[in-house]
Structure formats: structure tokens, C-alpha cells
Amino acid sequence: MKPAKVPAMTTDAEAEAFLDQDLSDLDFTQFKPVDWERGLKTARINMRVPQPLLEALKSKAAALGIPYQRLIRDILERGLR
Image 1 (tube, one colour):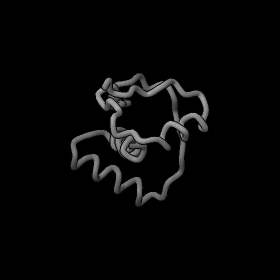
Image 2 (cartoon, one colour; image 1 turned 180 degrees about the vertical axis):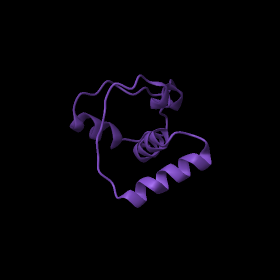
Image 3 (spheres, helix red, strand yellow; image 1 turned 135 degrees about the vertical axis):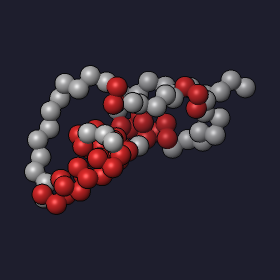
């Protein structure tokens, strides 16, 4: 039997109907991880955070040897997985 492919879906209802079925024969090799870090960064966000949180982010980023903005993007990306 040929492994199932994910159909094109344009509504939440279509996606919910697809997920409500048995997906044990779904071909998971068709999925590719998203890597936003390599993508072009064209959008900006501006947010206020407590100063101690920003200092903690900068400290953690320094310990990892990366810019703190990259650490924030990584945290956001992991939150979406």
C-alpha cells in the first residue's frame, strides 16, 4: 500500500478533519523542518520586557557565544515546535 500524503488544506475545518483520521500510514518523510534562522530577516518586533529578563537573556546568550537577538529567535522558534 502506498504511504499517505498530506492533502492541500485551505481551512481549519479541513485540517481538523484530516487530523481526526488514522494517520498511522502517513509518510513522514515528506515533512521538512523549518529553519527560520537562515531565512531573510525582514520583519521587526518591538516589545518591552523587565530589565532583569533582558539581562538574563544577554547573560545566557553570552554563555552560549551567540547574540542575544538570536537567542530570542531560537526561544520563539522552539515555542512554535
